[in-house]
Every structure is written in structure tokens, then in C-alpha cells.
Image 1 (tube, rainbow, N blue to C red):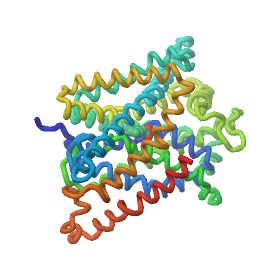
Image 2 (cartoon, protein in one colour; image 1 turned 180 degrees about the vertical axis):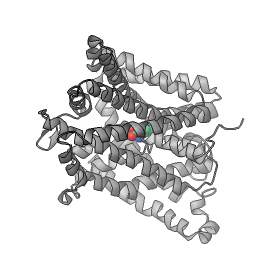
Image 3 (cartoon, protein in one colour; image 1 turned 135 degrees about the vertical axis):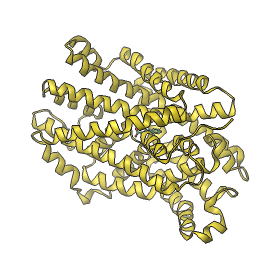
Image 4 (tube, rainbow, N blue to C red; image 1 turned 60 degrees about the vertical axis):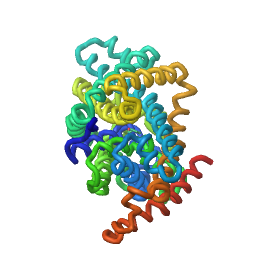
Length: 441
Ligand code: PHE
């Protein structure tokens, strides 16, 4: 059976950027930036992305692309000469990471969908429904999380080219247009300029603050979707030996650009809200992170009258779309494994995984106060960094045959390949360990 694949480089870049660009960019990045001094966070984020996150993304895509296999088999093959079992075990851990990610991500994505519909309900005059949709409740979670999971499954079961590639190419440009439209609108409101200043002019006295560096690091890893195998499986659907470095740079640039734009929208919006009399900050910190999107912005939108409702519907649709393209990449990880190793049909694998994700997310809904934050914490501060450390070690040390970064003849031909290989083998693991130890202890 031939493997399904992306049909073009741009198709791959859009799908991978679709995976990367999500709630992490539009919600996580501006929240982190607003809480960590604006410009200083932006600056550190860029440095960490260049030094560590992009190399990790490279390593992950490279392993998938060179082996042309799903993450469990890919890591098994890359580790075949030394630690094959451990390689497969790490692949399976990534698979669990993907399901963990989906279990909380689909809940939050469901909130976005509910808020988008709330604005529409308000526009058509069904106020009670609108208020219900905008109010957090277990019933709302129990309805909207499954809706979101089904939307993702409908795309994934159509396959890599017809589903993932085609939908990413449709949804990503839409997202960009909506985002730019919203920025143009917000920047014209009173108070926006103070926000713009805070965001764009870094306070350099803050850039060495360890908690800022750690937040920037976690944000960069989550934002680039590294460490759960999603990027690896996408890399495996691209023809071998393309110029991965360039593709990684394009994905990183798109992801960072959208995060930057989201900051350009949300930080000025916060200042507009503050200007209009809402209390947004206390001691330079946002009052409650959830409030950013679900209270401050909706209040701001509704103060703008009917146009505000249209803006709100556009904004929350934008978040839903961004979340959808991220959801499908994580779903593809276990689906590819079941199809390739357990001979499942794609349809059956997709619905089985979706059912598992649904169960996991309902457990989270049931024990929300205890589990929700914990799962996010475990995934982003432990599993993702450890997976990345493992990718660096695989590419730099464990993997011999088939690894072009360790092939002497090729390195003699392309000098930069040797340098790059050494950077991944020596510098990245040390940098990552230093940050990881700081996060964990
Ligand atoms: N990168 C996505 C975001 O920014 C989240 C994600 C993490 C997607 C891990 C896939 C895997 O929202």
C-alpha cells in the first residue's frame, strides 16, 4: 500500500503552520506577553525560538522525513542499531502526549466555538441563548467538546492530501485575513496606542528574568507543536530529502508572525478596554488569564454595539479555525500509527482515536479543577521538553545509518551540515537541560 502524502511543499508548509498556529499563538502568546512586560517577552521569545525551538522542530521533522514512517516506527528505526525498544517506547509516549494535548485543547476549542455562536445568537436577537453560550458551564463543555472533536475527525478521516492539506490551505489564509482586519479595527480605537507602545518597546532590564525566560521557552515549544510527534508525522508525508531547513524556517516565521500579530491585536485591545473603564491589570499582571479572552474582550466587543458583535463572531471563529488545524495534526499521530502498524482503515482509526479523546476530555471536564491545569503543566513542562531532548540525542548521537547529518561523505561535501549536526548534538541538549532543570526544580 502506498502512503498518502502532501502533494506540494507549500501544502506541507501550510499544514505544518496550521498545526503550529493555534490557541497557543492567539491566546497563550499575548497573555504571556502581557504578563511579562510586553516587549521584553517578545524579545526573549524570539531568541529562544531561534536558538532552541527551531532546531528542535528541525530534528523532529527530519526524523519523520528521513524514515518516512509514523512516529513510533520512525523513532524505532532511528534507534534500531542501539536502543530500538526505547525508540518505540518514546514514540508511544509521544502518542500519549498527543492524546493528552487533545484532551484539554478540544475543551478550550469548544469554548471558542460557543463564544462565536454566542455572538451570532446575539446578532439574530436570541439573547437568552447568547448569554447561555457565553457562560461557562459543564453542560456547555459536554456539548461543545464533542462537536469540536467530530469536526477534527471529519477532516482527518478524509486523509492527508484531501483532508489535511486541502483544509489547511483553505483555513490558514482565512485566519490571516480575519486577524489583519481585526488589528486594523482595534488600532483605530481610543487607548490602543498605549498598548502598542508597551508591546513594541522592550524593557531590557527584564530580559534576564528567569521566570520570563522559562515562560518564553514553554510558549515556544507549545506554539511550534514540538514533542508530540505531530510535526514528525507531517514530515514523513513529504517527499524525502527536500530542503528541510528552509521549510522549518518558513513554518517558524509564519508561526511567530501570527503570534506577533495576535499580540498586536490583543495587547492594544486590553488598553482600549482599560481606557473604556474596565479594570484589566493589577500590579502589572492581567487579572485572571481566562478573563483576557472570555471577559475583557467580549465586554469590549459588546460596548461597540452591533459592529462589535460581528467583530466578536469573527474573532472567535478565527480562534476556532486556528484550533481546528492544530487538533488535526495531533489526531494524525495515533491515527497514522494504527493505520500503518495495526492495519486499521483510516476511517476506523480516526473514529477510535476520537472516541478515546472524547473519553479523556470528559474525565477532564468531570474533574476540571484538579486535572485541567495539571495535564497542561505535565505536557508542556515535562513531556514536550523531554521529547525534544530525546530527538536531539537521536539525531546527534544514537542514529547512525540513514542519518545524513552523520554521514561523513555528505558532510565533506556540505560543510554546514557538520556544523549544524554538532549544534544539534552538543549545544541544544545542554541548553535544553539547563532550562528544563530550571523549570522542574
Ligand atoms: N501549536 C499549537 C498551538 O499553538 C498547539 C499544539 C501543541 C498542536 C502540540 C499540536 C501539538 O496552539
